[in-house]
Amino acid sequence: MPIPMTVNGAESLRVELAQRKGEIRQSIVKDIAEARAHGDLKENAEYHAAREQQSLNEGRIQDIESKLADAQVIDVTKIPVTGKVVFGATVTIAGEDSADETTYQIVGEDEADLKQGKISVLSPISRALIGKDSGDVASVNSPSGVKDYEIIKVEHL
Image (cartoon, rainbow, N blue to C red; front, side):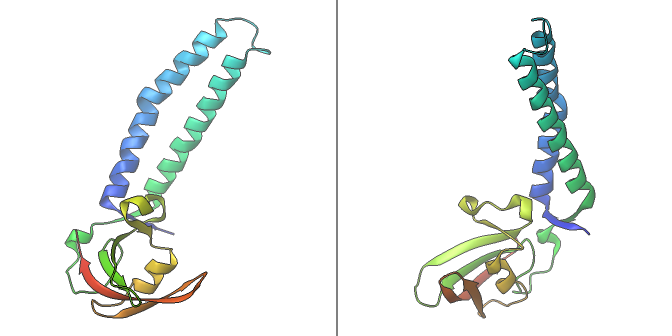
C-alpha cells in the first residue's frame, strides 16, 4: 500500500539515507576496527557497543529504503487550488469557542512534527479536515469531547 509523503518529506529521508550509508557507516566501521584492536572480544564493551550501533544503523537504512520504495510522493504545489483540504495542504483553522487561529500542514506519518505545525494525515484533526472546503466547520473527536473548528484558509505551499 503506498505511503503518502510530501516532496520535502521524501527529500529529508533521502538525505538521512545518504548520511547513514556514508559518513555514519564509515564511522561505525572505524569504531569496530579500533575496538577489535583492543583484544578479547568477549569482554570488550566498546566492541559490543559499536556492533549494536552498526545493527541499529543498518536497520534504519532498511526502514528508510522501504519507506521510499512504498512512497507516493505528492507535490501539493502541482494540485489545483480549489479551497478543498487535501494531503499536503496548509490549513488555517480557528476554534469555534475562541478566536485563536492555528495553521497546520497535513503530511505523511513520518513527517509529522507538531512543533513545526505538521500533523499526520492519520491524526483525528487531519481526518476531520480532509475533503472540507474553506469556510466549512470540521468536528474533531478529542479526549475532552467534540471540538468544532472553522477552516479559515487552505493553501498549497
